[in-house]
Length: 385
Ligand SMILES: C[S@@+](CC[C@H](N)C(=O)[O-])C[C@H]1O[C@@H](n2cnc3c(N)ncnc32)[C@H](O)[C@@H]1O
Image 1 (cartoon, rainbow, N blue to C red):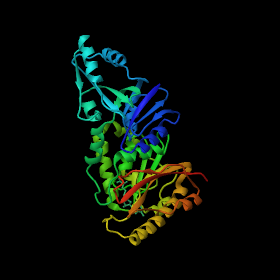
Image 2: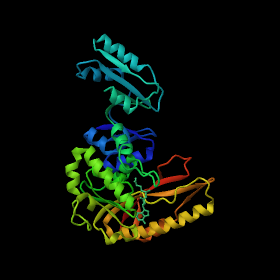
Image 3: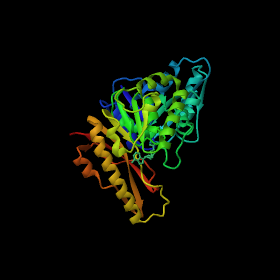
Image 4: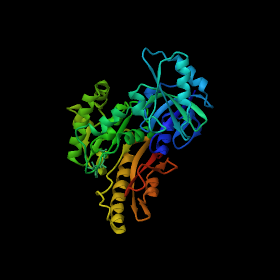
């Protein structure tokens, strides 16, 4: 089957995530806004909820834009009320096809409404609110039809609706957390650790993806926030509660397991984490990224931050190798600092390699706007000896 994936704001991330989740997929065409793939058939709604970086998933109907195919497809839809349909144009200008389809449907006695927006792309909000059958016109070449769209309301609830949000050390976007977890390619039910768990974004996304999650942090407040957010998650997404709570009762997790959620999140300095936990299948984390920047820091001040972080991360990787199962991955955010025209990075890749890790990401995966002072760069390492 041929499918199209409409990519999110960071297309490189979206593509890396899709290929991590569908490793057997064959790329047919890739642009900055979509990816056409050949893959065996899948449940598009399930896959959509698994991916953090994909906006829409569609099936490819053909490699030319055919009005006949669109009209036939719409006639097959069984609906009691008016049929809503729309078109989105990627990498090509809008045209009059929508009106032409509408005319043909009307002539055939089909009651329909053409859903339009000011933009040439219908947002996932518009598509789902209007329950709209949507055609995807891809670079004037491929014709696709939407099968599933990203659940924007769900993400927004998990991002802004949770009770404890740490505005000082910053919460990462749930979509980024999900992408990073998928990049770790852990089999379902495997055990993932976030040793800088903050308010628990990685933990919550991992639980929803069906992993056993463990989280730790040096800060008591972070542990309290994570627990509060996880309790909220279990209450707000009750379908997931049973399996999630069961998964956190893990005898390998040393510590206080009198209350399941307590055992699941624990306070420890990452530099001592091997004293608390072992047998981890992956580490997915956004570590401490340094003190909040005012934007006025000079090169010397940034170099000091880089030195401190380099020491902390190298100590952390020394501990990671003790607690990770063989061949497991570390998917981690490293900061890069913009100072004038220079981008300053942590000079630790060689030392991480010496600790037995291989860097898997060939390309730079940057998750930030270019004008930001601090860039998040995602690295994927594998413990290979
Ligand atoms: C950028 S925040 C993590 C944000 C988290 N990803 C989230 O979305 O909530 C970094 C966290 O690292 C923690 N931290 C700093 N130094 C640490 C250390 N030595 N060991 C463990 N955690 C540490 C801080 O307390 C903070 O909660």
